Each structure stands twice: as structure tokens, then as C-alpha cells.
Length: 91
Image 1 (tube, helix red, strand yellow):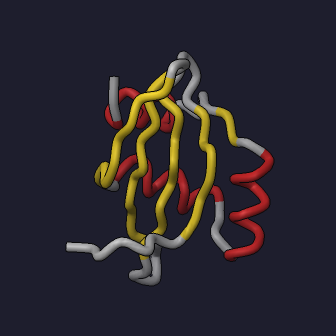
Image 2 (cartoon, helix red, strand yellow):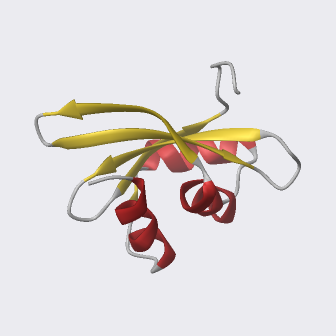
Image 3 (cartoon, one colour):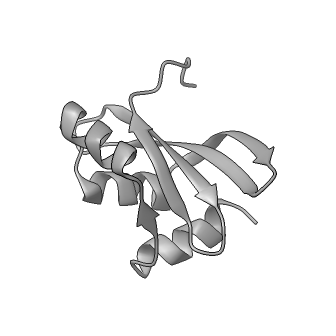
């Protein structure tokens, strides 16, 4: 699977968000629309497999030029696991 499949679900509003992701968004003043935009227009910075699905770390730009990192679990219905500011070097 991958980011394109996840993006299709997000664009249709068919995704889940964990309480942890929501709390992290509130703590960092990140809005749901910014998370959706990051998934739709961002790039995959990291990908790893787990027994119940693959996780993707997607880096996307906010309206003010800052970047956010969104970790999404690629399951039947994609699930946003966490949202934060990236600590990796961005190219």
C-alpha cells in the first residue's frame, strides 16, 4: 500500500485519528486541515512494518512554511497515530 492509497481515504474523510494524535495536535497548535494537507501533499520520510500493518511517517508543509510529521498506520481504514514537528534534517 502506501501514501497515495492513504491520501485517497483522507481526501474522502475516511480515516481515524487516535486520541494521542489529537492531544498532540492541540498541544502544538496544529489543525486537522494541516494534517490532512500534509498527508495529501507531503512525502514519506520513513516506512516500517508491524505485524498488523505498515506505518508511514509523512512530512508536509504547513501554511506558515513550518513542517509537520504525521505518522499514519496503513490499515483497512488509515489511522493517524501521532502528529509532531520533525526532528530530522529536511532536504
